Amino acid sequence: MASPSDDDALDLLGSDSGGTTPHPSTGLSIERPFPRNGGAADWAASITVVLAAAIILVALVTVVLERRRPRAPALGFLRLLGLGALPLFLLPIGNFATFEGSKSVEFCHSCHSAMDPYVTDMWDPESPTLAAIHYRNRYIPQDECFQCHADYGIFGAAKAKANGLNHLYYWVTDSPTARGERQIRHYGPYRNELCLNCHAGSRRFLDAKDGVHRDMPDELVTKNARTGAPVRSCLECHKPAHRSLEEWKARRASAR
View (cartoon, rainbow, N blue to C red):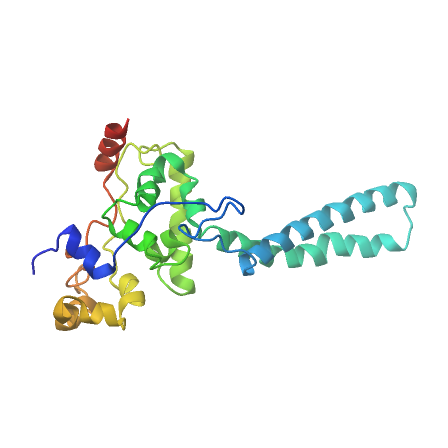
């Protein structure tokens, strides 16, 4: 099957719109996604800060009390509270806040030189790439990078975070990919399941192009026994996922 043009890809996935006009009194705009506040991750981050502050406060009170009243009955309780009880709560809540916070686009974009080409392409209102189309049409409401690059479920998410440790190593060692000088490559073949988790069952997906997806279910969900790659990758027809590093550099140079 021939690969669709950029217009075909937009037809399959949806039209787009651009522009940002903040309201003069509120400073808010309905043409950009509203930041989500008050969720579990925000509560966990706030509780983590409160617990950390409480541990520091208890430690200071304990030190002062030990110097002034070394035999005070409250010392045992304060030691248990500061060294045992509060850290016991801090560890899981802090881990959850860190884990959830690391899913955000802003976190991924914090490695600027490495991720600038991909995040700025996703934010580009004129980009024909899959990342940009999905972002500006809100096909993925939040954590867009994580949702497309991490398997669903606890083990898939843990594997993605383990790969993130590799990325940290590359960043600390100032590798060419971390400096944005070498193209980043995906770990192995991209799994169709990451697309089908959202699109499978969607009426628009099933009816697109006279039901072309209905004609290839086995090819989309079956994997090559030797390589583990899907028999037919979604990216064969719907591409590119991102602009390449060379394309991004050329576009940035022409904009100057």
